[in-house]
Length: 257
Image (cartoon, rainbow, N blue to C red; front, side, top):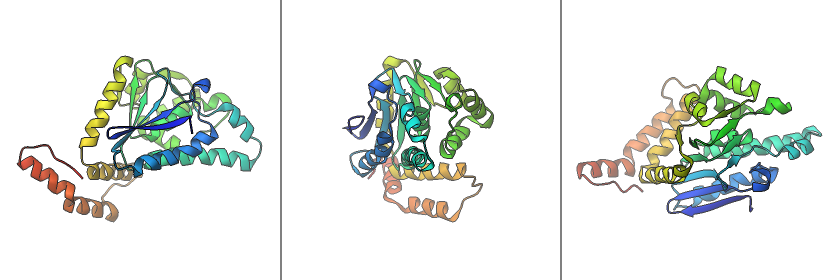
């Protein structure tokens, strides 16, 4: 698929959304194809992190393709096909076992925000603009994306963004917790690449476990459950911890499996 493209650079998989004629709006075929690209990156032993980005500096993604939404808003079966494809694409991104970073260099609207929120971490350029406009066209965000929005910015702010559909800039995105860092446009690629390379050096047993722990917190757990306790015991006995402790004592950089 030309509109989604995975390029391996060192230990990082760069997954580009490349549909410039539609400002990187996600078609049904792109939503359906996204899980396959993520599986490819997960199965590739070279890849230790994934950066999702718009191929053009001016736009991350303008969201779902509005013309396709109109074509699928004809009967329940057609609507379900489109809705399910969006849910499956974002859930595949959210469940990815490798760390994911959304590099947002421009407009990030609607479905583009859904993609970004499904990543672990979001970096934006100062040039970026955001908007969640379903209320402008009578649409409704899915539960998964709505929960991610509430988890990131809180219920009151989530309602503001959902109800108003207003545009806001990267500075506000940073202040409300939608993005983690904001960079000058000319620095964001190098800064994102450096951060992805840093994660590639870390223990991926720790990163995978950390993702599961955070997911447990966000699911409402208030105390360790048996599965998370088992995860910690396995981690404690695993090869990465042995290598990390040994490297610390020997005053050298660790070499994780």
